[in-house]
Image 1 (cartoon, helix red, strand yellow):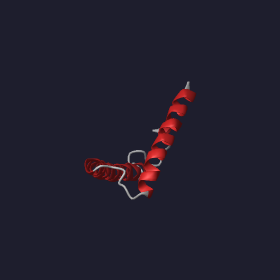
Image 2 (cartoon, helix red, strand yellow):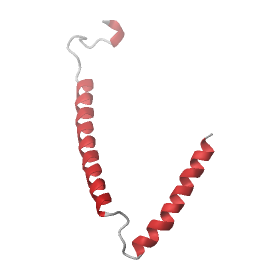
Image 3 (cartoon, rainbow, N blue to C red):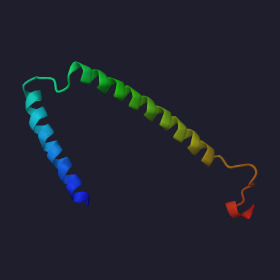
Image 4 (cartoon, helix red, strand yellow):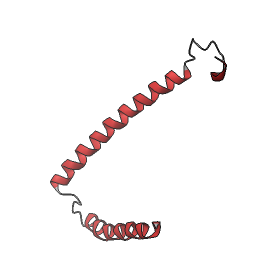
Length: 79
């Protein structure tokens, strides 16, 4: 069931490579001006999301590392 999907992905990558690589060698842009704008917006949104996710993960890790005062060092099942 996975083989047809992988085959489609490989064929798509070959087609993109056949178009994009010669275009870049000839100095042509691969993306249009509008495509570049979309790429910049997506990249900035992705960077913002990654930054926020990193902050949330750091905050969660800090909470997990901080021992809770209500447990008094007891194991979780011993309260």
